[in-house]
Length: 260
Ligand code: 1JT
Image 1 (cartoon, rainbow, N blue to C red):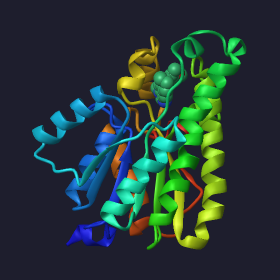
Image 2 (spheres, rainbow, N blue to C red; image 1 turned 30 degrees about the vertical axis):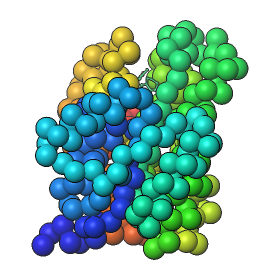
Image 3 (cartoon, helix red, strand yellow; image 1 turned 60 degrees about the vertical axis):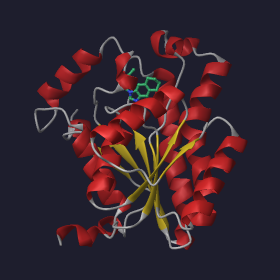
């Protein structure tokens, strides 16, 4: 069968960052279910758990495990991955689709960023990948793949992205350093730089409609990308299809980033 070339059937994949059915992480989870992977979810808020349970039920999907995990807390991260590792034995993949910053840090000029707002954005959106890699590593005994979600604001100045841009820059650099460390264990680490997709994160962005129409005008494909397209590239990066790729940032953005 076609999906056998992915080699994801029966593999244990941890998905972090489903807030609702629009989440990029939820798109990845749906694709993982469709190729027969065992999906293990982590969530922070009870509200996210409720939305996820509803989405699982609506799609008739069965999670292998659902575990609470606060990425800002070392103990919580350690306990979550210990629970997962002891239950499933081997972890084959981790999808890190987690970011947060305080609203005022996206609203005010970047120069006004506070020390605490900077630290919070970095801790939640960038350090959390390092912590996830550290905690998952002991259970990734058969090699594996770690994929995180980034955004163009990591390397370009996008009005309003501000402190998140700096956090995504650190995230993409962390992908390279983690790839170097974990390569010896046959663990690959990559980022997907997703084009703008209307998710919960995008909701608080007043200029989001403008961003979407600028992409439609300018991107080579003359359109925006979908949750499914981001999910399918993530599946490719988790799968055997990408076995020679690590430390990379892959753009799923209708080609927008190549334009001047
Ligand atoms: C966060 C937020 C991370 C929004 C995000 C994000 N990654 C992408 N977006 C959407 C976005 C936001 C802005 C933007 C373009 C896209 C909000 C909560 C914190 C984490 O401006 C050019 C601001």
